[in-house]
Image (cartoon, rainbow, N blue to C red; front, side, top):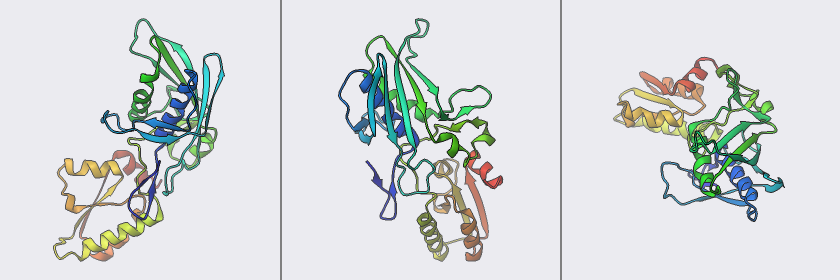
Length: 272
């Protein structure tokens, strides 16, 4: 289930993957099919031919006519991830299709501990999380059926107090966000030591010219070359910016650019 990111860290899956696994297990029970602890999931909507990955769930069972429940437990790998051990409940129920919009077959509801937008009360979900549900569930639906999923994170409201969700208008729980399946190495202490070692090698390179781009976040690392920044200047900083800034200054960096998506930079500016 887990993949390796080198010898130092075991990587796991982000919250949308565990929700999709529980949702698929609940739908399988709703269909009356046998329970399997491992759910085969497609994890990349852009790669339909990629092999399925087996993602475990804890349990699943029917709740009566037209309803079923499944439970998964988040395993994000070795990093300092807030979702470690988070229990995910997904209740599935049949839903009638709208004759005015037959293409709409999936309805999502935020239950206890799931973040909603403060203004609209709508579930806070990323495009990737929704696509993950769609590509793994639609093929299991009987003809003419729609599906309603109610998501519950029993500890989500408490855990959300340790995030900056409320500052961005997300209340009552954890947002179902994420842009990829695997967690990234950014917050674990070993990552700091690896990054400091990479910085040291960069500074000792005879060709080092004094310029450095310290990138915050995996998305920033992908975006920087597309905006014309040389890959040779990039160093992923993760969540350990203070020690890296000190090491860069002491090591001879003359010009340093902090680069990342707006949300990451806003958190940095706010001391979050």
